[in-house]
Amino acid sequence: MTSVTDDLPLAADFPKATVEDWRKLVDGVLKGAPFEKLVGKTYDGIKIDPLYPRAKGVAPVVGRPPAAPWQIMQRIDHPDAALANAQALTDLENGATGLALVFAGGSGAHGFGLEPSAEAVARVLKGIHLDAGIGLELQIGPQSRMAAIHVAEYVKSKGLDPAACNIRFGLDPLAAAAIWGHSPYSWDEIAPAVTGAIKGLAALGFKGPFASADGRVIHDAGGSDVQELAFVLACGVAYLRAIEGAGIPLEQAQGMVYARLAADADQFLTMAKFRALRLLWARIEQACGLTPKPLFIAADTAWRMLTQRDPYVNMLRATMATFAAGLAGANAITVLPHTLALGLPDPFARRVARNTQALLLEESNLAKVSDPAAGAGGIETLTAQLCEAAWALFQESERAGGAFAALQQGVFQSKVAATHKARDANIAKRRDVLTGASEFPNLQESEATVLKATPIALPPYGEQKYKFEALPPIRLAEPFEALRDKSDAALKVRGTRPKVFLANLGTPADFTARATFAKSFFEAGGIQAVDSEGFADPGKLAAAFKASDAELACLCSSDKVYPGQAEPAARALQSAGGRHIYLAGRPTDAEAALRAAGVTGFVFAGGDALATLQDAYRRMEQP
Image (cartoon, rainbow, N blue to C red; front, side, top):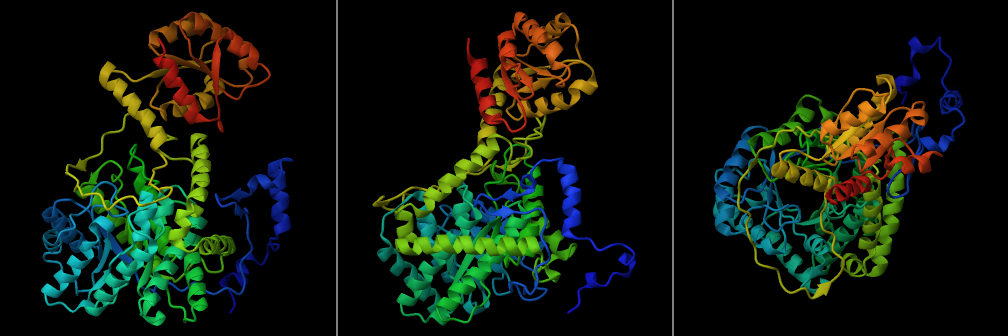
C-alpha cells in the first residue's frame, strides 16, 4: 500500500531529506557537544533517540473494536451511599458510560470508598439500569471482598439477566498483599478462595471478567513501566493457573482475567506500555495453546502524579494521560479528579474528570482510528523494548515461583525501591518537573474545595502471618509539599511566610534571568521571594535587605557582574544581619572567596533543590 507521504508533488522541487542532512544541522547546533546529549533514557535504562525512521512491515496492535469508544468510567467513592448514588446518576446522565465502584479498603481507595455492605450496595445502585450497557467495575480489597457477592445478589434480586450486565468484579488479593506487605494466608490458601468466588459468579450467569491484574500497585509505589508490565503478567498468569487448577478450561478462563494499568502524563511511554501489554499477553496466550484474544485493559490516570499544590495543573496531566491511554487502545478509562489528593472531590472536580474524556472522544474523535501509533518508529521501538525487558522480569518472577512467591522474595520490591530512589533524586534536582509543585509555584493560589466526609473504618484483615516488603502508594510531589506546609504553618502563626531577598546586582539585563530562576526555586519550598531593583552600591543593597524583613538573601546577576560585585555585596548583606546568603549560579573558581565573604550556598539548575530548601528551613530555625 502506498503511503500518502510517498507522493507529495508540492515537495517535488525540494531535495529529499536524509538522516545525514539532519545530523549536519544538529551537529551545528551542538557546537562540538556529544550527540549523546540528545539521547534520553527511561527509568528502565531504555534509550530514546531523538529521531526514528518509519517502522516498516508492522501491523496495528488490536485493542478495542474498530472505531469503538472506550468506556468513560466515573469514580464512585463517597462513604455516604445515598450521596454516592446521586453522584452516579448525575454522572450517567451527563456522559459517563460506566461506574468504578471504589470500596473502602480497595487498592485505589486513597482514604475513602464505599461501605461494602449489602444495604450500601443496594442504595448505591438504586435507579441504575445495569442491563442497559453500563460498564461497572468493582475496586475491592480483602476487607471489602463481600461487595462482589452483594453486587451479584443485587442483580439477581432485581430479576436482571447477569449475562446482560457488563460487570468487572475486580478480585485481586495479590494487589492488596503487595501494598500491605503481608498476608494472613499463603497463595495455596488464597487461590481456592478466589477461584471459588469466580466459579460461583460464573454459575450465576455473570460473564466477567472476574480477576484483575493491577499494575497500579507498582506505578503508585514509584516503579517503572517495565516493572508494572511484569507485575501485571505475573498476577494475570497466577490467576489463570488458579482458575485452570479449579477445573475451568483455559479457553473459558481466558476471558475471566483483565488488566488495569496506570496512565500518566508521559504520552509516548504510556502509549508504548499499553501496546506492549497486549503483545505480551498474546504471547502468554500462545504459550498456553490459546488463540489470542484482545485483553481487556482498564486505565486509571496516575495517582502518583497528582499534586496538592496548584491542583488545577492536574487537569492537564490527566488530559495527557487520557489522550495516551485512549490512543493506545484502553477499553475503559477512569480519570482521577484533580482534587483527589486533597480529599473527596466536589461536583466541579467530578464534572471536569468526566468531561475530560467526553471531549477527547466526542470532539477530538480519538477512538475513530485504531492504534494510530502503528508504524511510528519511536513508539514501535519503545513498545518492542518494553516487551523484551518486561518479559525478562516476568520470567524472573516465574523462576521465583510465581507472583506471590516473587513478592515474598522481594523480586519486585527491590527493583521498585531502586527506581523510586532514582526518581526521587531527579525530582529533588527538578530534572523531573512537577509543575505547580517543584516548578512554577503559586504562593497566592486559592484553596480548592473538597467535600467533607467521614471515611468508612474497616476492621483489620487477619493476622500478618506472611510478611514481606510493602509497596505503599506515594505521590511524587510530597517532599516539596511538606515544605509548603511548613510555609503555611508559619503564615498562620506569624502572619508572614519565610522570605528570601533577591539581591539583584547590575541592570535588569544582568539579573532578570537568574532572579526569575531564584524566585521559582525558593517559592517551590514556600519561601516567598522579595524582588528588588538592581544595585551597584553595597550600602543601598544592605539597606534594602534590612527593610525587606527577609531571613535569607540570594545574589542574582550574570557571570559578567559577579567577579566585581558579588563579594562586596555578600559582605554588605552579612553586615546587615544576613546569616544565610545564597548566590544564583554554579560554584566557580571564586567559590572559596565568595564563601569567605558570607555566601553559604549556591542555587542552580541541576542542583539538589530539595536538599537546599530543607537546609534553608533548618538554618532559619536556628536561634
